[in-house]
Length: 396
Picture 1 (cartoon, rainbow, N blue to C red):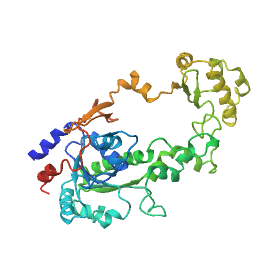
Picture 2: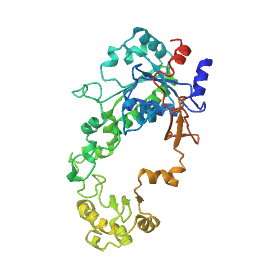
Picture 3: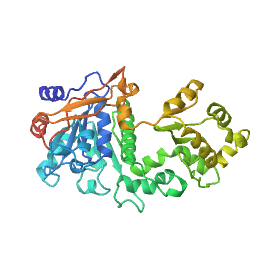
Picture 4: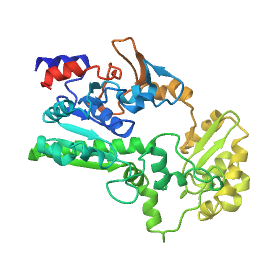
């Protein structure tokens, strides 16, 4: 096992992390599966990324801007830092047999092929667990394994569209507003990681692996559990978004974001009389003693609040509202957030590097274990960069 120790040392894996010693095979690409394996890596697992020899993961060329680093997109670097790359041609019988031998020695396998593809390769969960009964096998799809959407592309924007979540954003007159993030991919990856962790705990009791399944649609529906539960038990009436400064379809005024003289001020749940007194908004007098009107007339109330917020700077309002324990905050852009002391003390940024000179600034794990946040110094790999060492170590 000297080879394994050598490889793990190169990856700066902390042996005290809870998943240290576990091997994860990541056969997924784009975002949802690789995000799942990234979370496991940050908890100490060794992640071996299975890639096509001719170009690898398609997200290597999924550019969010015109920036590339070492020939790959920034998003690929961000979501695949610290992983190893094994180049496998799934159409090559010898490579396929080598992969099966690796599956026999792995703890977790993650795949997000379109439904039906993995079965044609002979690597579905039944076949994989026949090779390794202790394997925790995880599948992420767009819309599950059955139904009319199964064959549709499992892409984030399309999943947002079908889930209803896009309809919640924006003002009433805007039409649907998508999230500015691949939120379905990230939520599905996080849900899958939770399922894998639970299955690993169960395996520790029974010795048996499991098949963990989720999809972008399921994750996005779960994301809406709070508002969907209200809808299902409220006569299934569709909520009406606010026409002005909408921030939540079901919450009353003053909930929203308001432009001040030099920026934006977010105000959350606050009794209207309290806010009117602190901010000197006399025009809110008709609504003071009628809490039901705070929802029924929320657009008018928010317009009156907005008129007054615009007269001062954000800091001036915070000096009045925060000492009174009003739930409010300055809306920060990335530059302001990164410069803030509240962010800096979290120590959530790191620089990862690669032997070919690639260096990239990126984020760190959102988790702390026993007071420590994991650090991964290794950048995302080149396609097949670790193939020779992995084949030698595992006898492939």
